[in-house]
Image 1 (tube, rainbow, N blue to C red):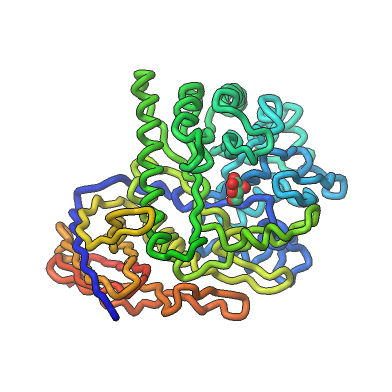
Image 2 (cartoon, rainbow, N blue to C red; image 1 turned 180 degrees about the vertical axis):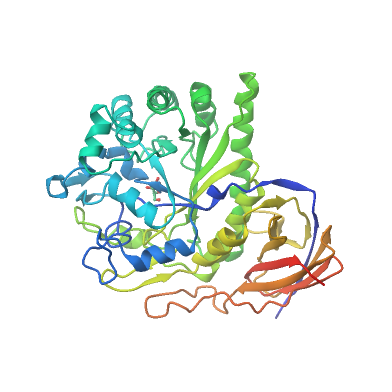
Length: 506
Ligand code: AHR
Protein backbone atom coordinates (compact mmCIF):
# COMPACT_ATOMS: atom_id res chain seq x y z
CA UNK A 1 0.00 0.00 0.00
CA UNK A 2 1.23 3.45 -0.87
CA UNK A 3 1.03 6.18 1.76
CA UNK A 4 1.72 9.72 0.55
CA UNK A 5 3.06 12.21 3.08
CA UNK A 6 3.02 16.01 3.06
CA UNK A 7 5.48 18.79 3.78
CA UNK A 8 5.57 22.57 3.42
CA UNK A 9 8.53 24.88 3.41
CA UNK A 10 8.91 28.66 3.43
CA UNK A 11 11.98 30.34 1.97
CA UNK A 12 12.56 34.07 2.19
CA UNK A 13 15.25 35.60 -0.01
CA UNK A 14 16.74 37.77 2.74
CA UNK A 15 16.70 35.23 5.59
CA UNK A 16 20.12 33.69 5.31
CA UNK A 17 22.16 31.30 7.43
CA UNK A 18 25.54 32.03 5.87
CA UNK A 19 27.57 32.03 2.72
CA UNK A 20 28.88 28.53 1.96
CA UNK A 21 32.62 28.10 2.35
CA UNK A 22 33.53 26.07 -0.77
CA UNK A 23 35.74 23.89 1.45
CA UNK A 24 32.51 22.29 2.67
CA UNK A 25 32.92 20.08 -0.41
CA UNK A 26 36.33 18.74 0.56
CA UNK A 27 37.39 15.11 0.57
CA UNK A 28 40.11 12.86 1.92
CA UNK A 29 42.84 10.55 0.58
CA UNK A 30 44.63 8.37 3.12
CA UNK A 31 47.49 5.96 2.60
CA UNK A 32 45.07 3.14 3.20
CA UNK A 33 43.94 0.21 1.08
CA UNK A 34 43.75 1.13 -2.62
CA UNK A 35 43.12 4.85 -2.12
CA UNK A 36 46.57 5.87 -3.32
CA UNK A 37 48.10 2.72 -4.83
CA UNK A 38 45.62 1.28 -7.32
CA UNK A 39 43.38 4.32 -6.86
CA UNK A 40 44.73 7.72 -7.79
CA UNK A 41 48.16 6.24 -8.62
CA UNK A 42 48.75 3.22 -10.80
CA UNK A 43 51.81 3.38 -13.02
CA UNK A 44 51.42 0.82 -15.76
CA UNK A 45 47.68 1.38 -16.08
CA UNK A 46 46.66 2.24 -19.64
CA UNK A 47 45.26 5.58 -18.42
CA UNK A 48 48.27 6.53 -16.24
CA UNK A 49 50.09 9.79 -16.99
CA UNK A 50 53.89 10.16 -16.95
CA UNK A 51 53.87 10.44 -13.17
CA UNK A 52 51.75 7.32 -12.71
CA UNK A 53 48.48 9.09 -11.89
CA UNK A 54 45.35 7.68 -13.50
CA UNK A 55 43.66 10.15 -15.86
CA UNK A 56 40.30 8.37 -15.67
CA UNK A 57 40.26 8.73 -11.88
CA UNK A 58 41.48 12.32 -12.10
CA UNK A 59 38.58 13.26 -14.42
CA UNK A 60 36.02 11.82 -12.01
CA UNK A 61 37.63 13.75 -9.14
CA UNK A 62 37.55 16.93 -11.24
CA UNK A 63 33.88 16.34 -11.99
CA UNK A 64 33.21 16.55 -8.23
CA UNK A 65 34.94 19.97 -8.01
CA UNK A 66 36.59 19.09 -4.72
CA UNK A 67 38.32 22.25 -3.44
CA UNK A 68 40.48 20.59 -0.77
CA UNK A 69 41.73 17.07 -0.02
CA UNK A 70 42.93 15.97 3.42
CA UNK A 71 46.15 13.90 3.33
CA UNK A 72 47.88 11.50 4.26
CA UNK A 73 45.56 10.31 7.08
CA UNK A 74 43.64 9.38 9.04
CA UNK A 75 44.98 6.76 11.39
CA UNK A 76 47.91 6.32 9.01
CA UNK A 77 49.36 9.73 9.84
CA UNK A 78 49.92 8.84 13.50
CA UNK A 79 52.79 6.50 12.58
CA UNK A 80 54.03 8.30 9.48
CA UNK A 81 57.53 9.66 8.92
CA UNK A 82 57.14 12.25 6.17
CA UNK A 83 60.87 11.95 5.32
CA UNK A 84 60.22 8.37 4.08
CA UNK A 85 58.17 9.74 1.20
CA UNK A 86 60.60 12.31 -0.25
CA UNK A 87 63.75 12.07 -2.35
CA UNK A 88 64.66 9.42 -4.91
CA UNK A 89 61.94 6.76 -5.05
CA UNK A 90 64.41 3.87 -5.20
CA UNK A 91 65.88 4.92 -1.87
CA UNK A 92 62.58 5.21 -0.02
CA UNK A 93 62.09 2.65 2.76
CA UNK A 94 59.29 0.11 2.94
CA UNK A 95 57.69 0.30 6.37
CA UNK A 96 55.33 -1.80 8.42
CA UNK A 97 52.26 0.42 8.65
CA UNK A 98 50.70 -0.22 12.04
CA UNK A 99 47.36 1.57 11.73
CA UNK A 100 46.09 -0.77 9.01
CA UNK A 101 48.76 -3.53 9.30
CA UNK A 102 50.07 -3.28 5.75
CA UNK A 103 53.39 -2.53 4.05
CA UNK A 104 53.79 1.09 2.96
CA UNK A 105 56.12 1.43 -0.04
CA UNK A 106 56.36 5.24 0.14
CA UNK A 107 56.27 5.51 -3.65
CA UNK A 108 53.93 8.44 -3.19
CA UNK A 109 54.82 11.15 -0.69
CA UNK A 110 54.13 14.82 -0.14
CA UNK A 111 55.68 16.07 -3.42
CA UNK A 112 53.86 13.55 -5.60
CA UNK A 113 50.58 14.16 -3.80
CA UNK A 114 50.91 17.88 -4.26
CA UNK A 115 51.51 17.29 -7.96
CA UNK A 116 48.35 15.17 -8.15
CA UNK A 117 46.38 17.85 -6.28
CA UNK A 118 47.34 20.38 -8.95
CA UNK A 119 46.29 17.95 -11.65
CA UNK A 120 42.78 17.70 -10.18
CA UNK A 121 42.50 21.42 -9.28
CA UNK A 122 42.39 20.99 -5.54
CA UNK A 123 44.31 22.22 -2.50
CA UNK A 124 45.93 19.98 0.09
CA UNK A 125 44.80 19.90 3.73
CA UNK A 126 47.94 18.47 5.29
CA UNK A 127 48.00 16.45 8.51
CA UNK A 128 50.97 16.05 10.84
CA UNK A 129 51.86 13.07 13.00
CA UNK A 130 51.16 13.78 16.67
CA UNK A 131 51.02 10.07 17.53
CA UNK A 132 54.62 8.86 17.39
CA UNK A 133 56.08 12.32 16.76
CA UNK A 134 55.74 15.89 17.91
CA UNK A 135 57.08 19.44 17.86
CA UNK A 136 60.40 18.76 16.17
CA UNK A 137 59.02 16.81 13.20
CA UNK A 138 56.16 19.32 12.82
CA UNK A 139 58.66 22.19 12.60
CA UNK A 140 60.85 20.38 10.07
CA UNK A 141 57.95 19.23 7.93
CA UNK A 142 56.39 22.67 7.52
CA UNK A 143 59.82 24.11 6.77
CA UNK A 144 60.19 21.49 4.04
CA UNK A 145 56.75 22.24 2.60
CA UNK A 146 56.28 25.98 2.98
CA UNK A 147 59.63 27.75 3.45
CA UNK A 148 60.94 29.28 0.20
CA UNK A 149 64.61 28.26 0.57
CA UNK A 150 67.93 29.03 2.24
CA UNK A 151 67.40 26.63 5.18
CA UNK A 152 68.17 22.94 5.64
CA UNK A 153 64.70 21.48 5.00
CA UNK A 154 63.60 23.97 2.35
CA UNK A 155 66.85 23.36 0.47
CA UNK A 156 66.28 19.63 0.83
CA UNK A 157 62.94 20.10 -0.96
CA UNK A 158 64.67 22.12 -3.69
CA UNK A 159 67.24 19.33 -4.05
CA UNK A 160 64.29 16.95 -4.56
CA UNK A 161 63.28 18.95 -7.62
CA UNK A 162 60.58 21.11 -6.04
CA UNK A 163 61.86 24.67 -6.30
CA UNK A 164 58.67 26.47 -5.31
CA UNK A 165 57.31 25.90 -1.79
CA UNK A 166 54.01 24.04 -1.66
CA UNK A 167 52.49 26.75 0.52
CA UNK A 168 49.93 24.45 2.16
CA UNK A 169 47.57 26.74 4.06
CA UNK A 170 45.48 24.32 6.10
CA UNK A 171 47.00 21.84 8.57
CA UNK A 172 45.52 19.19 10.88
CA UNK A 173 47.22 18.78 14.24
CA UNK A 174 47.14 14.97 14.23
CA UNK A 175 44.18 12.66 13.85
CA UNK A 176 41.59 11.23 16.30
CA UNK A 177 44.02 11.46 19.20
CA UNK A 178 41.28 10.48 21.69
CA UNK A 179 40.78 7.05 20.08
CA UNK A 180 42.31 4.05 21.89
CA UNK A 181 43.01 2.59 18.41
CA UNK A 182 45.16 5.56 17.49
CA UNK A 183 48.94 5.07 17.39
CA UNK A 184 50.17 7.24 20.27
CA UNK A 185 46.67 8.07 21.59
CA UNK A 186 46.61 10.67 24.33
CA UNK A 187 44.51 12.13 27.10
CA UNK A 188 42.92 15.49 26.32
CA UNK A 189 45.49 17.25 28.46
CA UNK A 190 48.49 15.45 26.89
CA UNK A 191 47.16 16.11 23.40
CA UNK A 192 46.15 19.71 24.06
CA UNK A 193 49.63 20.58 25.32
CA UNK A 194 51.34 18.86 22.38
CA UNK A 195 48.97 20.45 19.85
CA UNK A 196 49.61 23.89 21.33
CA UNK A 197 53.40 23.60 21.22
CA UNK A 198 53.31 22.13 17.70
CA UNK A 199 51.00 24.93 16.56
CA UNK A 200 53.40 27.54 17.93
CA UNK A 201 56.43 26.26 16.00
CA UNK A 202 54.38 25.72 12.85
CA UNK A 203 53.11 29.30 12.94
CA UNK A 204 56.69 30.36 13.71
CA UNK A 205 57.77 28.93 10.35
CA UNK A 206 54.67 30.10 8.45
CA UNK A 207 52.37 32.60 10.21
CA UNK A 208 49.86 32.48 7.34
CA UNK A 209 48.63 28.92 8.02
CA UNK A 210 45.30 27.83 9.49
CA UNK A 211 45.17 25.00 12.03
CA UNK A 212 42.63 22.32 12.86
CA UNK A 213 42.81 20.78 16.33
CA UNK A 214 41.41 17.28 16.95
CA UNK A 215 37.96 17.01 18.47
CA UNK A 216 36.48 13.64 19.43
CA UNK A 217 36.54 10.71 16.99
CA UNK A 218 32.76 10.63 17.19
CA UNK A 219 29.91 11.73 19.40
CA UNK A 220 29.66 8.32 21.14
CA UNK A 221 33.16 8.53 22.65
CA UNK A 222 32.93 8.45 26.45
CA UNK A 223 35.23 11.49 26.63
CA UNK A 224 33.15 13.53 24.14
CA UNK A 225 32.51 17.14 25.17
CA UNK A 226 35.04 17.01 28.02
CA UNK A 227 37.73 16.33 25.40
CA UNK A 228 36.71 19.32 23.28
CA UNK A 229 36.49 21.65 26.29
CA UNK A 230 39.93 20.65 27.64
CA UNK A 231 41.68 20.70 24.26
CA UNK A 232 40.19 24.07 23.31
CA UNK A 233 41.00 25.55 26.69
CA UNK A 234 44.66 24.67 26.09
CA UNK A 235 44.90 25.62 22.40
CA UNK A 236 42.26 28.33 21.86
CA UNK A 237 44.54 31.18 20.82
CA UNK A 238 46.61 29.09 18.40
CA UNK A 239 43.96 27.16 16.45
CA UNK A 240 41.20 28.09 14.00
CA UNK A 241 39.03 24.99 13.69
CA UNK A 242 38.12 21.90 15.70
CA UNK A 243 37.52 18.60 13.92
CA UNK A 244 34.45 16.36 13.97
CA UNK A 245 34.24 12.84 12.53
CA UNK A 246 31.25 10.56 12.07
CA UNK A 247 30.30 7.42 10.15
CA UNK A 248 26.90 5.75 10.08
CA UNK A 249 25.76 2.25 9.10
CA UNK A 250 22.61 0.19 8.65
CA UNK A 251 23.85 -3.01 10.30
CA UNK A 252 20.43 -4.12 11.52
CA UNK A 253 18.76 -3.28 8.21
CA UNK A 254 16.40 -0.76 9.80
CA UNK A 255 16.19 1.79 6.99
CA UNK A 256 13.81 4.33 8.60
CA UNK A 257 16.21 4.51 11.55
CA UNK A 258 19.26 4.63 9.26
CA UNK A 259 17.84 7.54 7.26
CA UNK A 260 17.24 9.43 10.51
CA UNK A 261 20.92 9.27 11.48
CA UNK A 262 21.61 12.74 10.09
CA UNK A 263 19.66 14.01 13.12
CA UNK A 264 22.56 12.69 15.19
CA UNK A 265 24.93 14.68 12.98
CA UNK A 266 22.83 17.84 13.58
CA UNK A 267 23.08 17.31 17.33
CA UNK A 268 26.79 16.62 17.12
CA UNK A 269 27.40 19.90 15.27
CA UNK A 270 25.19 21.90 17.64
CA UNK A 271 26.99 20.42 20.66
CA UNK A 272 30.47 21.21 19.35
CA UNK A 273 29.38 24.76 18.49
CA UNK A 274 28.12 25.10 22.08
CA UNK A 275 31.43 23.84 23.51
CA UNK A 276 33.45 26.23 21.31
CA UNK A 277 31.29 29.12 22.49
CA UNK A 278 31.49 28.00 26.13
CA UNK A 279 35.30 28.16 25.98
CA UNK A 280 35.05 31.49 24.15
CA UNK A 281 32.84 32.88 26.93
CA UNK A 282 35.07 31.47 29.67
CA UNK A 283 38.10 33.16 28.14
CA UNK A 284 36.22 36.40 27.38
CA UNK A 285 37.61 35.95 23.87
CA UNK A 286 36.50 37.75 20.73
CA UNK A 287 37.71 34.91 18.57
CA UNK A 288 35.26 32.31 17.23
CA UNK A 289 36.38 28.75 16.57
CA UNK A 290 34.84 27.16 13.48
CA UNK A 291 34.20 23.52 12.69
CA UNK A 292 36.03 21.20 10.34
CA UNK A 293 33.90 18.09 9.75
CA UNK A 294 36.88 16.41 8.17
CA UNK A 295 35.60 12.82 8.09
CA UNK A 296 31.99 11.93 7.37
CA UNK A 297 30.25 9.19 5.40
CA UNK A 298 28.47 5.86 5.55
CA UNK A 299 30.87 3.07 6.54
CA UNK A 300 29.94 -0.49 7.47
CA UNK A 301 29.54 -2.67 4.36
CA UNK A 302 33.22 -3.64 4.29
CA UNK A 303 33.68 -4.40 8.01
CA UNK A 304 33.34 -8.18 7.62
CA UNK A 305 35.60 -8.43 4.54
CA UNK A 306 38.27 -6.31 6.23
CA UNK A 307 38.49 -8.70 9.15
CA UNK A 308 39.69 -11.41 6.68
CA UNK A 309 42.57 -9.41 5.16
CA UNK A 310 46.05 -10.91 5.52
CA UNK A 311 48.33 -8.50 7.37
CA UNK A 312 51.43 -6.97 5.76
CA UNK A 313 50.24 -6.95 2.17
CA UNK A 314 50.67 -3.92 -0.09
CA UNK A 315 47.56 -1.87 -0.83
CA UNK A 316 44.96 -4.59 -0.16
CA UNK A 317 41.28 -3.81 -0.89
CA UNK A 318 40.39 -2.32 2.50
CA UNK A 319 37.25 -0.39 3.47
CA UNK A 320 35.79 -0.95 -0.01
CA UNK A 321 32.16 -0.24 0.78
CA UNK A 322 29.87 -0.77 -2.19
CA UNK A 323 27.22 1.87 -1.67
CA UNK A 324 23.51 1.42 -2.11
CA UNK A 325 20.66 3.71 -3.06
CA UNK A 326 19.73 4.15 0.60
CA UNK A 327 23.32 5.17 1.42
CA UNK A 328 23.01 7.93 -1.18
CA UNK A 329 19.90 9.18 0.63
CA UNK A 330 21.72 9.41 3.95
CA UNK A 331 24.73 11.07 2.31
CA UNK A 332 22.28 13.60 0.83
CA UNK A 333 20.84 14.27 4.28
CA UNK A 334 24.34 14.59 5.76
CA UNK A 335 25.14 17.23 3.12
CA UNK A 336 21.93 19.05 4.08
CA UNK A 337 23.04 18.93 7.75
CA UNK A 338 26.40 20.48 6.85
CA UNK A 339 24.73 23.23 4.83
CA UNK A 340 22.26 23.90 7.65
CA UNK A 341 25.19 24.90 9.88
CA UNK A 342 27.27 26.59 7.18
CA UNK A 343 27.55 29.49 9.62
CA UNK A 344 29.98 27.40 11.70
CA UNK A 345 31.03 24.41 9.57
CA UNK A 346 33.57 25.88 7.19
CA UNK A 347 35.39 22.72 6.15
CA UNK A 348 34.09 19.19 5.57
CA UNK A 349 35.73 16.17 3.99
CA UNK A 350 33.75 13.30 2.55
CA UNK A 351 35.79 10.31 3.72
CA UNK A 352 37.18 9.23 1.47
CA UNK A 353 37.61 9.89 -2.27
CA UNK A 354 38.78 6.80 -4.17
CA UNK A 355 38.19 3.09 -3.36
CA UNK A 356 38.31 3.49 0.44
CA UNK A 357 34.72 4.28 1.57
CA UNK A 358 34.57 6.40 -1.53
CA UNK A 359 32.32 7.91 -4.20
CA UNK A 360 34.79 6.74 -6.88
CA UNK A 361 35.77 3.08 -7.34
CA UNK A 362 38.40 1.52 -9.57
CA UNK A 363 39.49 -1.89 -10.69
CA UNK A 364 43.24 -2.28 -10.55
CA UNK A 365 44.16 -2.47 -14.23
CA UNK A 366 40.53 -1.81 -15.15
CA UNK A 367 37.82 0.82 -15.17
CA UNK A 368 36.77 3.58 -12.77
CA UNK A 369 33.12 4.37 -11.95
CA UNK A 370 30.77 6.45 -9.82
CA UNK A 371 29.19 4.92 -6.72
CA UNK A 372 25.64 5.89 -5.72
CA UNK A 373 26.92 8.44 -3.17
CA UNK A 374 28.83 10.24 -5.92
CA UNK A 375 25.63 11.91 -7.06
CA UNK A 376 24.35 13.81 -4.00
CA UNK A 377 27.90 15.03 -3.41
CA UNK A 378 28.23 16.09 -7.05
CA UNK A 379 24.94 17.99 -6.98
CA UNK A 380 25.74 19.77 -3.70
CA UNK A 381 29.21 20.69 -4.92
CA UNK A 382 27.86 21.96 -8.26
CA UNK A 383 24.75 23.80 -7.10
CA UNK A 384 25.31 24.34 -3.37
CA UNK A 385 27.59 27.36 -3.55
CA UNK A 386 26.26 30.75 -2.51
CA UNK A 387 24.06 31.69 0.45
CA UNK A 388 22.21 29.07 2.48
CA UNK A 389 18.67 30.27 3.17
CA UNK A 390 16.97 29.68 6.52
CA UNK A 391 14.02 27.39 5.74
CA UNK A 392 10.89 27.02 7.84
CA UNK A 393 9.75 23.42 7.44
CA UNK A 394 6.49 21.79 8.45
CA UNK A 395 6.54 18.11 7.62
CA UNK A 396 4.73 14.90 8.52
CA UNK A 397 6.96 12.94 10.87
CA UNK A 398 7.74 9.42 12.08
CA UNK A 399 9.39 7.72 15.02
CA UNK A 400 12.19 5.17 14.60
CA UNK A 401 14.22 2.99 16.99
CA UNK A 402 16.62 5.75 18.03
CA UNK A 403 14.86 8.92 16.92
CA UNK A 404 11.51 10.58 17.48
CA UNK A 405 9.77 13.14 15.31
CA UNK A 406 11.84 12.48 12.21
CA UNK A 407 10.58 14.75 9.41
CA UNK A 408 9.88 12.90 6.15
CA UNK A 409 11.24 15.97 4.40
CA UNK A 410 14.87 16.91 4.87
CA UNK A 411 15.60 20.05 2.89
CA UNK A 412 17.73 23.15 2.49
CA UNK A 413 18.15 25.81 -0.20
CA UNK A 414 21.13 27.70 -1.57
CA UNK A 415 20.93 30.98 -3.48
CA UNK A 416 23.65 31.93 -5.91
CA UNK A 417 23.19 35.66 -6.44
CA UNK A 418 25.69 35.93 -9.29
CA UNK A 419 23.67 33.61 -11.50
CA UNK A 420 20.24 34.30 -9.94
CA UNK A 421 19.97 30.60 -9.26
CA UNK A 422 18.11 29.04 -6.37
CA UNK A 423 18.58 25.34 -5.65
CA UNK A 424 16.47 23.30 -3.27
CA UNK A 425 18.00 20.03 -2.06
CA UNK A 426 15.46 17.62 -0.61
CA UNK A 427 15.40 14.05 0.67
CA UNK A 428 12.07 12.25 0.89
CA UNK A 429 12.52 9.78 3.77
CA UNK A 430 9.10 8.25 3.15
CA UNK A 431 9.63 4.58 2.23
CA UNK A 432 5.92 3.98 1.62
CA UNK A 433 5.19 6.58 -1.02
CA UNK A 434 5.70 10.06 -2.36
CA UNK A 435 5.91 13.35 -0.52
CA UNK A 436 3.64 16.20 -1.57
CA UNK A 437 5.96 19.15 -1.27
CA UNK A 438 4.94 22.80 -1.36
CA UNK A 439 7.32 25.68 -1.00
CA UNK A 440 6.42 29.31 -0.48
CA UNK A 441 9.17 31.22 -2.30
CA UNK A 442 9.13 34.69 -0.79
CA UNK A 443 11.08 37.19 -2.84
CA UNK A 444 11.36 34.70 -5.70
CA UNK A 445 8.14 35.51 -7.58
CA UNK A 446 9.90 35.67 -10.91
CA UNK A 447 11.76 32.35 -10.48
CA UNK A 448 10.87 29.27 -12.55
CA UNK A 449 11.97 25.63 -12.33
CA UNK A 450 14.86 24.93 -14.69
CA UNK A 451 15.30 21.30 -13.77
CA UNK A 452 14.14 18.81 -11.15
CA UNK A 453 16.75 16.09 -10.78
CA UNK A 454 15.75 12.89 -8.99
CA UNK A 455 17.93 10.05 -7.71
CA UNK A 456 15.73 7.08 -6.84
CA UNK A 457 15.57 3.33 -7.45
CA UNK A 458 12.90 0.68 -6.87
CA UNK A 459 15.46 -1.31 -4.89
CA UNK A 460 16.97 0.58 -1.95
CA UNK A 461 19.86 -1.91 -1.95
CA UNK A 462 20.73 -1.23 -5.61
CA UNK A 463 24.41 -0.45 -6.28
CA UNK A 464 26.73 0.60 -9.11
CA UNK A 465 29.51 -1.83 -10.00
CA UNK A 466 32.21 -2.21 -12.68
CA UNK A 467 29.78 -4.33 -14.72
CA UNK A 468 26.75 -2.10 -14.06
CA UNK A 469 28.17 1.38 -13.44
CA UNK A 470 24.92 3.15 -14.35
CA UNK A 471 22.40 1.16 -12.36
CA UNK A 472 21.68 4.03 -9.96
CA UNK A 473 21.91 7.37 -11.76
CA UNK A 474 20.08 10.67 -11.43
CA UNK A 475 17.40 11.59 -13.96
CA UNK A 476 16.02 15.04 -14.72
CA UNK A 477 12.48 13.63 -14.64
CA UNK A 478 11.05 15.38 -11.57
CA UNK A 479 7.84 17.35 -12.04
CA UNK A 480 8.39 20.39 -9.81
CA UNK A 481 6.64 23.55 -10.98
CA UNK A 482 6.80 27.12 -9.69
CA UNK A 483 4.46 29.99 -10.41
CA UNK A 484 4.09 33.34 -8.70
CA UNK A 485 6.30 32.26 -5.82
CA UNK A 486 4.57 28.93 -5.16
CA UNK A 487 6.44 25.72 -5.85
CA UNK A 488 4.73 22.33 -5.99
CA UNK A 489 6.28 18.90 -6.46
CA UNK A 490 5.65 15.29 -5.70
CA UNK A 491 8.96 13.96 -4.42
CA UNK A 492 9.15 10.27 -5.35
CA UNK A 493 9.33 7.59 -2.67
CA UNK A 494 12.77 7.41 -0.97
CA UNK A 495 14.42 9.97 -3.24
CA UNK A 496 17.14 12.61 -3.42
CA UNK A 497 15.88 15.72 -5.23
CA UNK A 498 17.60 18.76 -6.67
CA UNK A 499 15.11 21.43 -7.73
CA UNK A 500 16.92 24.11 -9.67
CA UNK A 501 15.19 27.45 -10.18
CA UNK A 502 16.36 30.56 -11.98
CA UNK A 503 15.05 34.04 -12.53
CA UNK A 504 12.77 33.99 -15.50
CA UNK A 505 13.47 36.40 -18.36
CA UNK A 506 9.75 36.64 -19.21
O1 AHR B 1 38.56 7.05 7.13
C1 AHR B 1 38.93 5.85 7.73
C2 AHR B 1 39.43 6.03 9.15
O2 AHR B 1 38.39 6.44 9.98
C3 AHR B 1 40.49 7.08 9.36
O3 AHR B 1 41.76 6.62 9.11
C4 AHR B 1 40.33 7.43 10.80
O4 AHR B 1 40.69 8.75 11.08
C5 AHR B 1 38.87 7.14 11.09
O5 AHR B 1 38.71 6.37 12.22
